[in-house]
Image 1: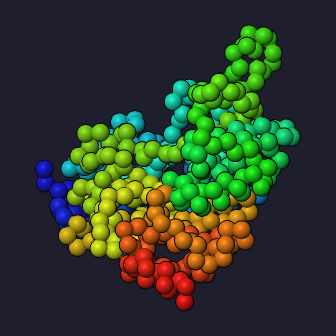
Image 2: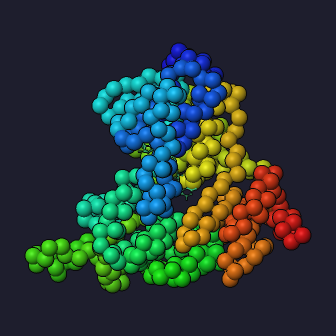
Image 3: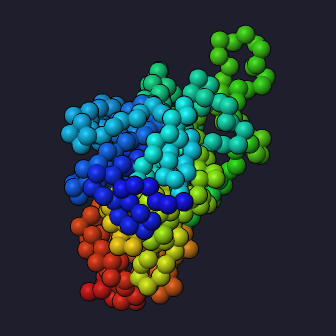
Length: 429
Ligand SMILES: Cc1cc2nc3c(=O)[nH]c(=O)nc-3n(C[C@H](O)[C@H](O)[C@H](O)COP(=O)(O)OP(=O)(O)OC[C@H]3O[C@@H](n4cnc5c(N)ncnc54)[C@H](O)[C@@H]3O)c2cc1C
């Protein structure tokens, strides 16, 4: 099939072409802004399944959940900005199909949007615990991905004093929900399958440190447990009680009572609508190093699995963090404008943060649970430190608590690629 008007295979976009962005959130919005700041004058249609204009998700488990911020404060783009950027908003509508070669997005009502360039920025959705897919907020069972999820969860945990909240999963989102709910006076239990929470990302030493924060803030963290089911206590079904208690059943038979259950077991990229589309989906939309999934089709943010070149290596990676999604949205727009032949590789040094129990964790690079980890400044006991992560003789990541400036000092080492011994020697000078 020949390339649509406004572009040809491998080439960039004419300034008056048509672009469709699927996903009205961080990566999609950054792509829209970048198209305009780079001088793109054509039409931009922004398709979003949620009814809202783009907003930020990190406050949903923190300031919005706690009530410190009204939801409006999490807004990324308001109506005025959207109109300034001449965005054709297609909100509350789901993209149901893509024809990458024909550059056409079909919406859930059958409408077809033809374009010269397409940005896939449809993110990821919360995973459900097998067997709990049919349970909803009305049953007291929540996941947390959207603004509406956060507001519904807030309503549930503030209904009375001392609400019993059981969080399934002690990853970053689960730990943030636990921390926010504990600070709001809820009785919080966290159930985690790993023996040491976050050890798959941060390793056992730092994972143990994270675990100690839960206990220090009155959260009952139970590790190495497996959840068998969530539901109403069977013995009380049919007793006529106004509401029989919600329980989480563990594999060993133990039952943990709850008023609210939050399932925080990770996310899955939103690729279900991309079957037979001409782009490859395998744990995300598979892209080249410039974020192209096909000629004229780029992907960005939590949905994109791209060829990340760094430190002389290359790996296919999907990252679920705010800064990478924002940078990818910008990079994807530039790639689309330049075309596949002239676009530049997307080679960020990943960064993320997490706020738990009044503490900000910050990480640059790409840590793994089996990395060598060395604390090079401060100490875990002090609660302020910098730790380096090394793998295969190279520095891979740096984590800090209470040392933001020192952390950023390591960015050039990760950018340039540094040996592990060299990084340790530098840290000790
Ligand atoms: C509660 C919470 C707290 C977080 N805290 C942090 C933090 O502290 N630090 C950090 O680094 N990161 C954090 N993150 C991660 C960060 O928010 C994400 O990396 C970021 O939102 C990814 O942006 P995105 O635009 O790629 O995808 P998303 O934000 O997931 O947006 C994708 C959008 O596309 C829409 N969509 C999906 N499918 C379709 C379709 N077929 N048609 C139309 N629209 C569709 C979705 O409804 C959604 O609105 C947090 C995330 C959550 C949920």
